[in-house]
Amino acid sequence: MSYRLPPLNTLRLFEAAGRHLSFKQAAAELNLTPSAVSHALQSLEDWLGAPLFVRGHRSLTLTETGGAYLPQVRDALERLATATAALPGRAPSGRLAVSVAPSFGLRWLVPRLSRFRDRHPDITLSLDTSHRPVAFPRDGVDAAIRMRQDGEEDGGTDLFATPLVREALVPVCAPGLVAAVKTPADLAAHSLLHVDSVREEWAAWAALSGIDPSDLMAGPRFDTVHMALEAAANGLGIAMGRLPLVQADLTAGRLVAVLGPPHTIRTGYWLITSRATRNRPEVVAFRAWITAELAAQAPV
Image (cartoon, rainbow, N blue to C red; front, side, top):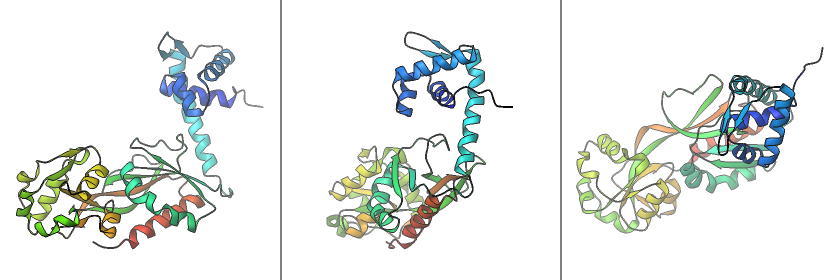
């Protein structure tokens, strides 16, 4: 007996439109036009004999039928995608999609990618720099590099997390300022550079160094780690360096660590994959390469 199913592609469109509550956003995600999405979903509704959406002038909502159907369709599509990804004996695709936190991608990963290409010329790598959580397998991402704390839950039984490197904190500045920063008391004579998204880093470093953090909270603020480190390299003040993000600047001499040694903290970077895809040849190759690269980086 054959299954009586609507066209699979219309179900993919329904899931995306139902998730976004927007034909336009679903179309952008699936590289289609909003008109094509609208027509396909009208065909699905005709096939089912029930409306799935209420189409307003500037709004889109699910009907009661659509709201009941959406989670079942999503679950079925995820099961199909997971089964396909985990298919034993499947030939390597030669493609690898990695989602990476922007700061790690810009300051550590991208400068080293030529070495991955040289070692694995048969793998075409695509990068997505985003902070948003990755939905495996729906987002089409094979692996994600994310910051997390030791002991943090994986976020689901279908995920597999590999620890890559623990972060370490050490103040950094331009070479011209090094001679003037010999003790923590010398920090009072300089601007301390702060990053809004990690406001606790100077206080965390002070606690690990056994000094009072109350005098370390003032100074210019930036919205990214990259901007704060660039400001430090240009002599604007002293930034809190986060290893491994600052490693390339220390090696090149653009920045110099002061008041060391670095203090290892609880946060670090992890490689997250789904359990279904963690043994794909491309994922295995990338995991081995990035682990070796981080292990080989020079100490401060």
